[in-house]
Image (cartoon, rainbow, N blue to C red; front, side, top):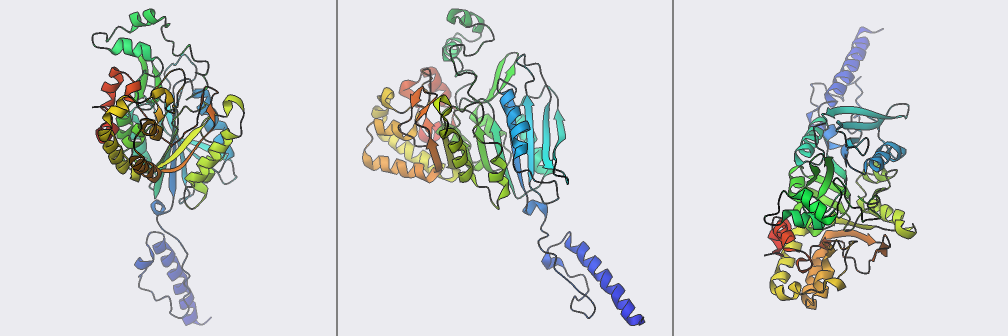
Length: 452
């Protein structure tokens, strides 16, 4: 063999090796490695997209706050339904599915550890659940501090171009911890001079120690923000505490819990995600979404198909019959919420008397059993007699926020849904002075001045 040709072949092989090594860590503009790829005997083929993984992959975190009566339902969502859907492999640039969960093993609520797992398919196509972190049993899932720790670890361990979170638990919107489950008991024990008298208040109201809603026939069917059952009572989060637990902006934050669709919740989280998925009414325990398809909508396409997911999720319930045909869903763009607050503030300022005398019984509500804290946002103003010019400004502001909305004709056969703007709001004239005092702490109240 001609020695010159042999040397050229060796140089060519070396050049290809060096070029491939350089491409694994550099982009195209950094490919000056001192060899001219046009030189005779050297073949150079650009290998395609070698962008760093943080520029190509996405991370989806399911946060399962299930140390409560929803434990079996959340387990089914993650262990049985999710693996049936689209699951990426664990390649360097593949999208990432993570599950953080604290799940009660039984209704005795004995403390259990929490886990962060990665769900992926191995080369044989089998779904793998790989435990990344184990948290001690003392860790409370319904805690801004815990959520911040989990999300901070996720971002550090899995750099990506985008992050989304699906949060599942019980929920009662902006209401203070324990209020929704037993408002009479809360009012009695939290009025001035009554704090700390929980046991005597239970006896006065005939509520057994440790019980929740014995008067609600659907208490086991439906899903404050979050709930951990603690020895001293429920641990729930305020909207502000929940917001403090999100250390970086998410592409989307989707709730699978009751009463997440209040404007109070949306406004309090407007700086934490580009899109919010919420429900103004309750959510059936089986879950808001079809977990066999959720990852297909969020990860399989080039971009998350949030509208498609919400359309599919609503159709899943709307085709049911009886009490199972119960759903209210809204997808919110958060960049319009500041303007919505400004519009509402102006209307409230102009019509204080009308709102103080709003006909609550005529306004569309999203509640059962006289838990009258969630009224349709637009209908509150419409039924208060606000002039059409101001109503149109309100509708425009709502439309700028609401990407998708849908509601079934009724909910659990308990109330009909004739009007649906996509968000609810507290109505002070139908509330209580104690609730008003809590409401003044909400970011939405600072923006709207609903409660003075």
